[in-house]
Structure formats: structure tokens, C-alpha cells
Image (cartoon, rainbow, N blue to C red; front, side, top):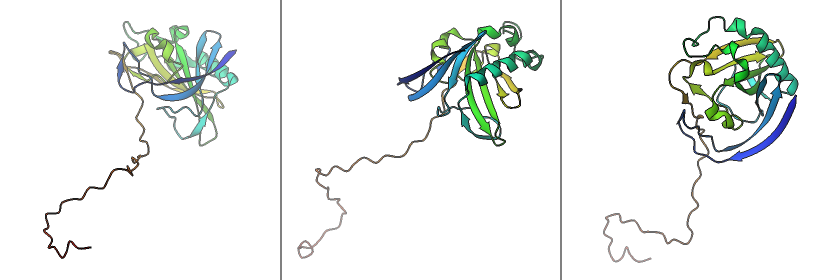
Length: 209
């Protein structure tokens, strides 16, 4: 498996973006690009903050090349059964297990309270954001079978949690804003203090200091 470690930095405005544009967040991140047999994607480092989680989550970890190979093997083996009802894949929407090589992947690793390693995999078939997939997790609404995700327990080899987007126009979901520490502006030491008027009239004796 070919793997290239890349360190990127980018500045952008956070906000809602629709199908014609995807807005990346202001942050630094690490990712690993992975190429395997009939799949390509990006593994996100454990320190990269994401707006997704898993049940009984205890922490994060960075999936290895071996983990990704196992994940792909398990998904290939079980996806047809998991997708047997073809939810949100009617009409013009693709049946996901018939087009697996069309999707770019995003991999995020978690650990749970049992000590198991779980990889959340995001599948995106969208040329408009193809170049953005290494920069941030792409979360969407709408678009049906062009966008879906699932989870794989690396230790038990369980594949579960398949979710396929509903129909309708695609909307890219911005990252959740984080509250930062409140920063007070330093006092200007060279600006003279103003005397507030209280409306009280003082006698001449009271004005003596």
C-alpha cells in the first residue's frame, strides 16, 4: 500500500456551503493518503478534531495501513448484505455496493470503553469536493447514494452503522463552532482617565484635597 504523509495549513472562513462550493475551516491538520486495490482515501490523525463520534467512545487513534486494508476487506465482504434494502438509492441515485470504486474515502479512528478500535469511514462521490477531501471531513445532507458512511470494529471485524444520505439537493454541513477563551484587551496606560459626571454639586470646601 502506498502511503504519503502530508502536513497542510490553510485559512478559510467557516460557514454553510452548497453544492457549488465547499468552505474549509481555519485550522492545521495532518492526514495520510492511502492507495489500495480499488480504493483511495485519506486517514485523519487522532488529533484532528471531527464532528462525528461512535457509541461508548473513549478516545481517538490513528488507523494504520493494516487497519485500512482490513476495513476495506470487511466492507467489501459485507456491504451487499448491509445494503440489501437499498435505502435512499431509488431512481437516479446509485446503488452504493455496485459502485464502490467510484467513492473517495475518509477514515477516522476511535477507541471505545471496551478498548476496541473503531474506524468510521465516509464515502463521497462528488467531483466538486474531491480536492477538499484531504482537508476536512465532508459532512452533507441530501445527495442520496452519493454520500454515505459506516463503522468497522477493527478488533471484532464487525461492520455496522450504515447510513445513506436522503434525497434532495446537496448541502454541505459546516463544522460546529467551538467556544474559545475570552480575551480581554489590554488597558491603554497612556490614555488619561475620564472623570464621570455624577450630577452632584460639591461645595468649595469639599473640592479641597
